[in-house]
Image 1 (cartoon, rainbow, N blue to C red):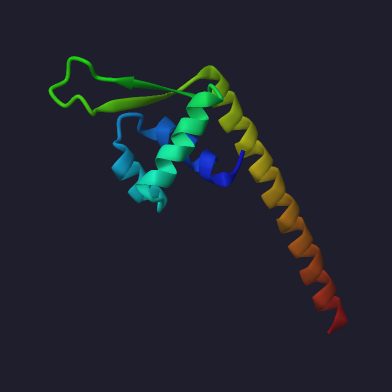
Image 2: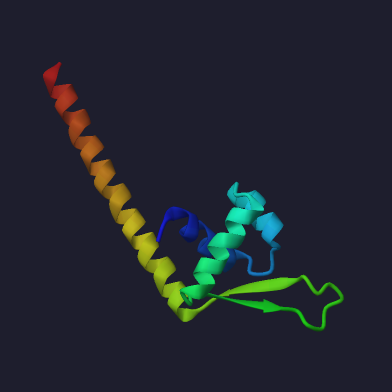
Length: 102
């Protein structure tokens, strides 16, 4: 799972009723890229897509994270944070070495 998919899962979690166009704009994706990613997430069972059948606008959809999607989002977020902490510690060590050389 890549950062693009994590960002999509996070965006869906925050606002499941936003349009693909608005979501793509917020994420800096083309509509085609977002559509492709959403299709992958759905095939993996991480999201469900419901349309509002009783709505006047038949193109309105709601994206729902499945329990598997919530677990995956949590797992990816934890791994992301671990990686950032590791990078932070490495930078801290490098700065410490640079200060000692002076």
